[in-house]
Image 1: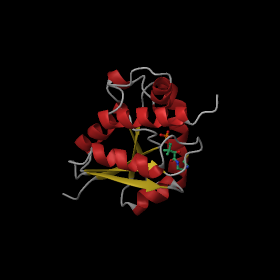
Image 2: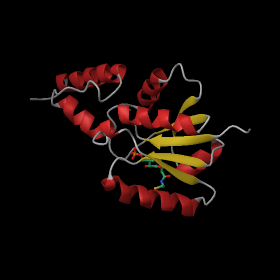
Image 3: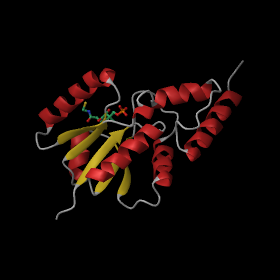
Image 4: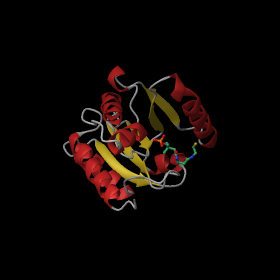
Length: 168
Ligand code: PNS
């Protein structure tokens, strides 16, 4: 049987346990999942592209079926360049639906050969987003259980560093 593959794009600033869950679910369906990290999200990222890619690499170091790449430009073009015709997106709640529906339709109109494949994360992660994790960390709250251990440490270090350079 030919190898099946899918691309899982996002900002991943930083990767959360919800993203990890979707990647693992994706691997139950596809032989290979390419995690595609958007190079320049409109919002100024807390972590550089290199840092975001490195963190995901570290988490999936023992899984050769997970590839991590940075991308810019159109997602559908990048998907084609990776030899895949499937885009995975996680749907946490109804509130995600409108944006995701619009993006899937736009991608389909740009590239009718590329399908969007929606997956639901575990109910434990339906409330989780990278922006909320950043906010909790900034306010000194607990982020354990929300992001993988190495990410939690890097997040705390980054926020501590940012606070040091703040002008009172
Ligand atoms: O995790 P995010 O920030 O919701 O991911 C958004 C992402 C990276 C999937 C989206 O912004 C994207 O695909 N950007 C690439 C540009 C593109 O192809 N735009 C047209 C489709 S709307």
